[in-house]
Length: 276
Ligand code: SIN
Picture 1 (tube, protein in one colour):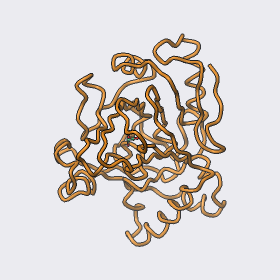
Picture 2 (cartoon, protein in one colour):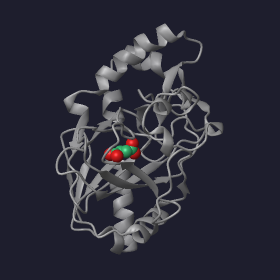
Picture 3 (spheres, protein in one colour):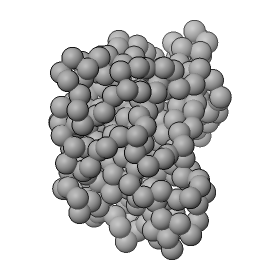
């Protein structure tokens, strides 16, 4: 297995490894690389749904997304589908999966199944590197804060997705909820400090007004979305991306209108997040 940085500050490309055939030793090395980089890309994988599921189970427990449709291929694989005639896509803005849960997801393993002729790349951001680059003063302020995360404004009554052509594919509104987490977390495995807010789900800081919260959040979001912390992955048949939801954001580009895109996603269960 050969692991090389994908870009200066974001992700790593893993070559010479088939995820369906990893020895226990190689899997251990892969876990180390996952902790170090928080984002791994793979090419030319032969990973049918059962093998996708088996690989995920070797990493940890699976958590089901409350809103996405399970794929026909496997009940624990969620379908991230955009049909030909659909205008909206799932995940078309910076976010991290399940930050609205009390125990946010550890990671997600996304496998390309049907790709458009061009477009449909996914962008990623490295929240450990972005945090490191903040000033000591702002780091101290952020370390004292807790952020509120929600899915109501997306999946709930009148929520963003409910107003679009994604609505018919979503699970019930009784599943919406909120959670609060430290704005800077200590990564459970790497021990690194990570900025844990995201544009998709963070709705403010505890004890701050919405206006105050968004003045700071908007600054942080612009800070993260810089070339040195971000990268873009171009999907090809056989491509797989495996990201750490505690340490990254992602953004599915919606630039392939009139074409179908189908991805299979397995989300790994995480734990409550500790303050840095
Ligand atoms: C997601 O998990 O948000 C979807 C990412 C993608 O489809 O590229």
